[in-house]
Image (cartoon, rainbow, N blue to C red; front, side, top):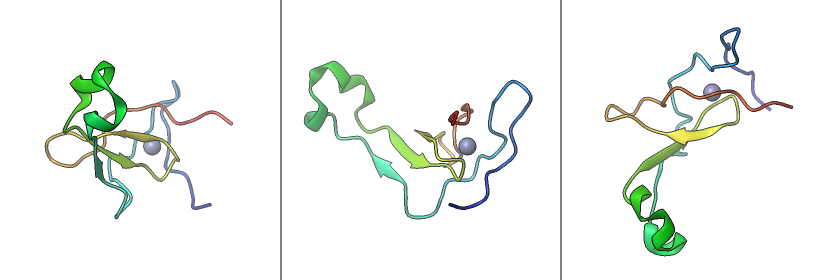
Length: 68
Ligand SMILES: [Zn+2]
């Protein structure tokens, strides 16, 4: 497992750089109509282990690091 990025005291990850090669686009037809609002949304993995959605500029959205 790679080194974790820093987190703020309230548990938020400070990293916004996605792990290269982990970016994927949600295909809502595979998840059903309940998740159609996610269609076309792009996700990527953070080095902290969390998968989160991307902003328009391919930065990771603010997210909490997973608890162990
Ligand atoms: Zn993270």
